Amino acid sequence: MKTSSSNHILCLSLLALACLSGAARAEGDASRGEKKFMDCASCHSLEAGKNGVGPSLAGILGRKAGDNPDFRFSPALKRSGIVWSARTLDSYITDPQKAIPANRMPYAGMPNAAERADLMAYLHKFLK
Image (cartoon, rainbow, N blue to C red):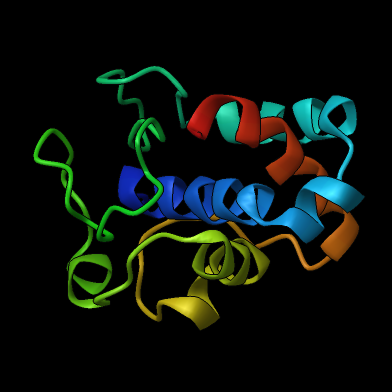
């Protein structure tokens, strides 16, 4: 399968940023979010410097998309100009291909806002 860790990182990054927003934290359930993260963990790590199929999500908030020298990102992600925030992560996780067309992450997205809020609540513990 044609995948890129950068696409997976973007997905998780969007979720993490949504967690940092007050609304996502207020509405999300971290224990449910931990279960949702299991899907992400097959490609992404929350540990700094530990890349997998997807890049590590450590330090993602406030970082420009594709700006991790230790990971090979898709050209679409690098050109996106996105800086990861709660809003951009939420948008990306909702529908990665709509958020950044031609990115390589083979993730269909998480259209359910409550599930994204849960995931962000879990990620908030690690990405702040």
